[in-house]
Length: 447
View 1 (tube, rainbow, N blue to C red):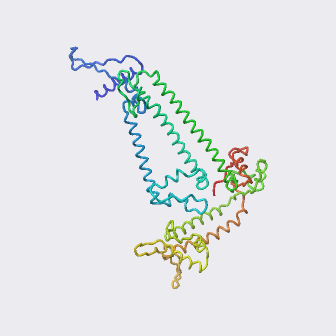
View 2 (spheres, rainbow, N blue to C red):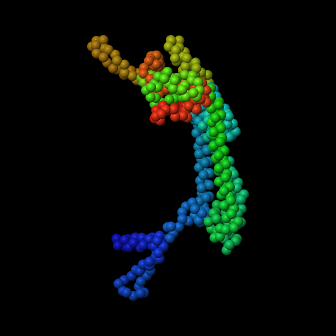
View 3 (cartoon, rainbow, N blue to C red):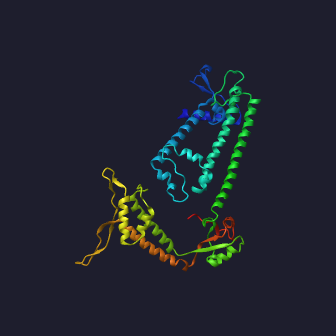
């Protein structure tokens, strides 16, 4: 298409002329083959607006001509925040066990929150940092403090903006030719003022530095509080085994024994050692633990099908049910069935009918007495009894693996427990071996 090619050529010539600063050539077009000057016309292509940064969204000139964007942002943020707050409150009211699961703890449980729509807001805002630190953890305290820092920070910025910048923009942010024209709160009059010298621009420059100082102040204070809170949390947990235990990985062959590793750590002369354990290379213990965890999960799923999660019965006693389940006697089986009938969730609330015990389909080999051949019929058995028997067998396997745990060759991982928590944290920050890819030390993960 020759017309499209010609248009693209004219646009390219204009762009090159604009970038190089040379005068843009005037393109002549003839309406016919006649050389009459009256039949010619000029086409001037101005592409300077493409290189004008004032037309970019987010800049001052853009906001001066599109002042509704600020109002849209404020309205959108308020609307989205209100919707998210309402949705969270409804979900918490519908599934309290999912959003308040720590209330089921027996020790160090948080305080109860009323089960109404917005009742969680006031206790959350008035809860002390020490209570959150002792019941929930350090991450929750820092999360709350970060939100508190943002609230205080934007309150200060909004106060300076409304008390200083808004009056300046309202009274002085106008052109000299139109003194009666005043700007609204969503305008950007700084971009439309021709002369930026004088008291109008000085106020914006000074407030820019003030805003920067406010940001630095709150961020620096939050960092200081984070470090202080971290050490305070370590002081609270200094007597626990997790705060005094180191996990060492990538052990070299010369340190894959408890005696050699004990001498190596003691040679650092940082603190006293309480215990040293080197994990063996054999995988039987790991496999036995994984198998028992899988069987235990299946057994818990079977109980959840009868009791629900959580159990709504007022007389529910998990410790009594646990003792009855893990005791292999006929009396324990009778007690277990009686407790399940009492605490079972109701299948039909009108007829008050409890749910039945879950069933499991398994294939058990049976030998035919007449033909002597083995058959594999599909049978329905009780799921709780089946997984309880499997759990007892998994316990036996795990006990045998524990007995042979220290008999094999040492592996590449070990755990070292120090007497004092400060010594453990000091060692965890060191590079203790000549080869940086070996003997990596860090604090042991929580159990």
